[in-house]
Length: 270
Length: 270
Image 1: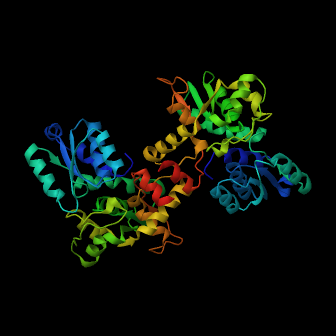
Image 2: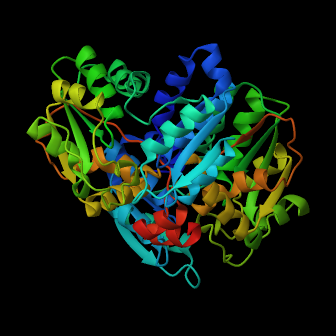
């Protein structure tokens, strides 16, 4: 469905008991995890309910509905999606599969770094985009297991550097929903499960500006002929703007996903 | 360099004698063959001179210059590029490698269909975009050799259906430079070498509108996450608009290239 989120969603739904599968699952997501759960649910024959912010990209809402999910909308600036998810789960007997703070989701996301290193051999560094930290935690576990000397870096939007603040202070810092074009990284904090893994396995947390994300989107469209959404550009933007010294090093960069309204994409790259 | 043209250009330059390599090559192209010759020349250590129309996409001119070629500009609506090419070739001792009407270019372009069928097995049909017919002639030779029952179709822009007229009348029809967004197919006629191959090996010639090309570009950007230039969308547009009956059939579609100004791309997909 155009993003790494499918890895975690499919892994988590696959691991459910037959009873839990029959009852169905619920999740909240700004978009890619929503589509991932919806598609994985359809493939595995499990009913899905997705709690999506009213201002999620129209392409992501339409795609999620297209995969057969039931959509419940909420206002991400005033309502608490965790509370809505918990209520639906208890009222309808659904299993809540959160977008990042879940062991099976983290393990699924980690398969991208695993596949990368299996193909390239050991790396000196690995750059990974960060919202709630599921991909970063999974990637760090996978990378450090297969390539122990690899330094793993998380990359956030400047406006939403809660992960960097948390990493450097040693405790989870929660911020207001950040305003950034990287809508997949508009998470207010790392998770209770992802944070300790990140603290243990990650070398540092970096940030890039929205302007650097746009330059990176333009590079991908013009030279690589691929459409990458802003959140998917975070790690590559950090490499291009040399936030760490990568000269002469073997550096892995995880690029994902490609779900963006064409009107927004056109505005960014024009 | 973002299009199939590299296949033919590299094959043709590789086949030159050491003396001809030392003297250098010249070609004319609306863009992708220009970049292909420039890049292949750089890789093989052969100097390249490219005759490009003044209104070629800026991204293609910049990329061609970036690969180290010397650029000679001309007005495609009033000047004859063949004459300019012939003059430069004789004055400077350069070998002219035309964009499609050359055996080694046709053979090189045919490798895409060969690789496709080697990977997928026999096909019922193969759809291929057409400008001067180099890709179509090479693809038809390759496809009919490896998958003899495969019906090969060429696809042109409606405004530039000289190939369809030629195919159906049995003689090369030359038209004025067509106005279409498919700038790679703004060729006035098929070639003396490509036409007889097409007549012998191709099942029919189809056309699509510029509007159908834009719909196809949008599909590739939104669902496949790839940037495809209008000319590269021709074959897929014919499949999407069901110009032939493809239901239940194994249909190959050649999609290439991705060289388009981002400002134009943004205008088309917005």
